[in-house]
Image 1 (tube, protein in one colour):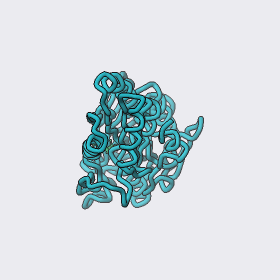
Image 2 (cartoon, rainbow, N blue to C red):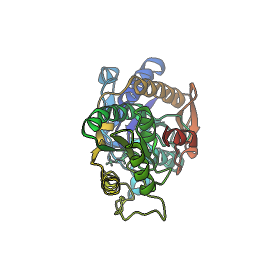
Image 3 (cartoon, rainbow, N blue to C red):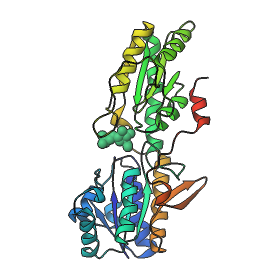
Image 4 (cartoon, rainbow, N blue to C red):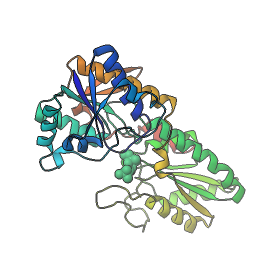
Length: 340
Ligand code: F6P
């Protein structure tokens, strides 16, 4: 078989582990040839293909980012996009696509599979960890590790200066990184989109804490929002495309806390550091396991599905499981984040 592979959406550590697994397993076990497409679905539309051999992927396991490049491109939203994908599929004499991406890229994969009737298997990746149907997506563990280390480091400087430290973490729609790293790093207040906040209650909690401690750490997801009807005169934190503006909610929460408490308050925006660098062991493992499962599924004739971690196992889920949905942080984790 001849299989095309692409990485779409925001990059993250662990993508190369998945590409490497598809190429090596495909060659060694199934005699497949693998064709990489540069910059996600855009590369498929443009016919920007590169053959991938075992030698090409040797050594990439530990590298962050994606050797193929990535882009936020959805063929069904581009004029003539679907037809161009079909042209490339035929021109390259492909038997299917393996598509590594987050919610947008996987939704597009489902549309390609159905509309063009070509085999497509997806692999979920996103530091946001918000893909429904899988316990974890590639990249999340590394982002949490980076964010937890940052929160650890903020403790000593916060304490030395008697400050409130606000740290803004990625997470557009759901607060997985803020909640997970916030709990693991011992943040005192954690703000996630799942639970709109009341700045007055937060200021009260910080003032209470500062009766016996001289510092506080506040972890804020970039998608966190004030509760309706709460006392908040901040600006919109959302851009024209409906996504959070980096640093916006963090800056506004920082100013609001300083105004309401009178405590010196500082902001750290971790931003893209959460997406960069070497993948953790867990992300290398997840990328590898999902890459193996994806090529095996493709060879077995599966289509219109994505690999999913469920408990101890990698299984296949139909794209319809995740399409148009968001995996929210569960109540039990939010409870742990509410403060101990
Ligand atoms: O979806 C992953 C993510 O890193 C989000 O956490 C963040 O809001 C967004 O991507 C940033 O997107 P871009 O790379 O387009 O700036």
